[in-house]
Image (cartoon, rainbow, N blue to C red; front, side, top):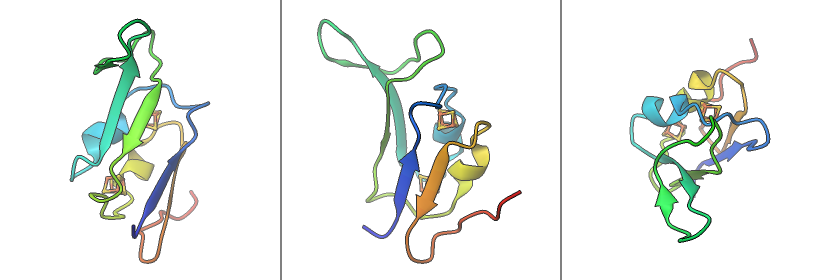
Length: 86
Ligand code: SF4
Ligand code: SF4
């Protein structure tokens, strides 16, 4: 795996900006139904439970890092485009 995307889920609001922004659809945001344990592709109460990163798809472009309004995504890996600190 070339790149690693880490999301601080304590601070993620589930806004979905990163999912929309990712050019290769490597991010998946969902909640889990407490009864059926099935994935629900909608955010409940503005809060996501899971943000999955399909690392095999990730191109290390850094778009998701820039797209997150709460600055909770960190990208690492050789050649990753890590945005400079603003
Ligand atoms: S770094 Fe780029 S390819 Fe990887 S998850 Fe973020 S937006 Fe998608
Ligand atoms: S853009 Fe940031 S706050 Fe919004 S879902 Fe992605 S990681 Fe969470």
